[in-house]
Length: 400
Image (cartoon, rainbow, N blue to C red):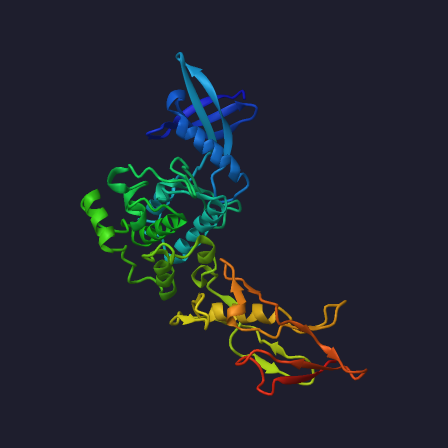
């Protein structure tokens, strides 16, 4: 790889080496952010290159153009080429806003960070050091929209299932103010990144660190005692619920990046949804549900639990989304080739939810095709599931 250019200025320094802005002349004029370190100390940069090249094309992860070794003053130097963020990092962006980012913009930025985390977690990695200075800012492509955020600095990335050494000072693997309670004792999962995201959200809204502390020991003690970052009092009720999901004490109860992307808080302020205006029509054909789509807003409600106890549903919006998904399953209709089939055991425990809260029907053990009686097109169905069917147990449909 032959690269000729001019080092314009130093962008930053770290334990690995130096980051500088490079303007190339060959093969084309281009600006790059180049991380450089002595080859003997460049293991972190080699690791970062290997990881970043797996995320080529991910819009919210910084792009890596490769690396090469040069010889300078008799020393071997490894250089990692990254795309240059002309707008700086999220910490710089917060300063441009005067220290605090309006909530309507902050949640837009939170969504971009989450989209990057979805890609990272899908590949089996945990970033482990998410903070404003590791989130780079790029100008919008149209010059009108808000800036684009991309996750950077993969030096502390951890692979799922790989045991952590836990030899960090006071147990903090990454930057202390953004670390989760369980990470201090060496339990590192994707839930750590979600806690860090919540901390970043609080900092964007308040301009302050998410949890005040005197020193690292004080912060460690506070987290282990059960203290969590303060949720801003002037935040919207839906936003507070979003942060509650990020700061769940039990990492297994903390929402995943995919789940948070489906949170109503991150939807546009004016959302077309399905209010409860549907009705069930049973005659003269198979049961169908008609919905009237209207523009509506949904305030947070208390949790509801499926009878099976398998998943919590947040509010009216999620419930209506699930209702529509279930009705879209088109149970008991012609398949085009085979006779129409009825599931005969549709109930909450047989409707499974994916991580992103998509409903899928399961358990077809009691499914049965309709019985055709002569040429009258009358189909008889014997019902098998108490509590979910007509008590007469035999339902006759006139198929049209």
